[in-house]
Image 1 (tube, rainbow, N blue to C red):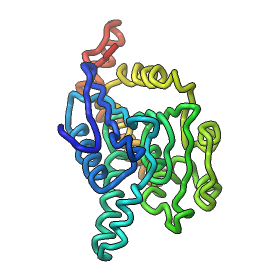
Image 2 (cartoon, rainbow, N blue to C red):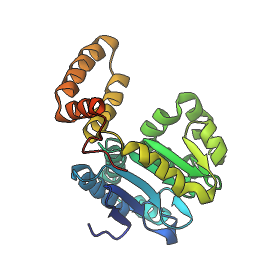
Image 3 (cartoon, rainbow, N blue to C red):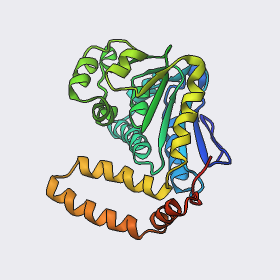
Length: 262
């Protein structure tokens, strides 16, 4: 996979790293980066060898949001072209959000606007203590439209109202208080913290993880009666799956299933 604005690597364990690679622009998003992240996420999702994906940024920033030069071009575009660019951003976020593999946000520095949106589609988000955050759109006379679906789901309505409406800067500690970040670590311990999460993920069945991720989205958006039907069938499906049967038999035989990684 050859890209201009990102870099993708996959190690021998099946851990993929999706690196935003525009450090000279603080990894700000433009149309090319949005397209490449979307394509890469789809490729990684289809790859059966990939067990988890780490999303991070090159250099001192995670993602500074939308590239202002790109936005300037949008102002000269037609209405249809603006809507199309906006839809492409929404599609990128949705593709990352619905990735069937665990998506771990390795937040190595500042994340503003759309960068905060990219954090919010991660299943697990770990940030360095020195990182800073803000939902900056209203300071520019804009609105955090595309990212709102995912940021509000991450931090909740009350916290979103606290932060969306004034673009106030947030420290990493404050971002954790607002449920935007799951864990904050000293800058020199970021890789160690990410590896700790991966250690647990790689002990789990990949098929079970994919089904459980869908389960979370499903039960959060349906009523109790519908959920009871769905979950009864889902558990029966996993009991009948090769992965589920292997996991149970290996547990009783006191041996590791074939999908377990160290």
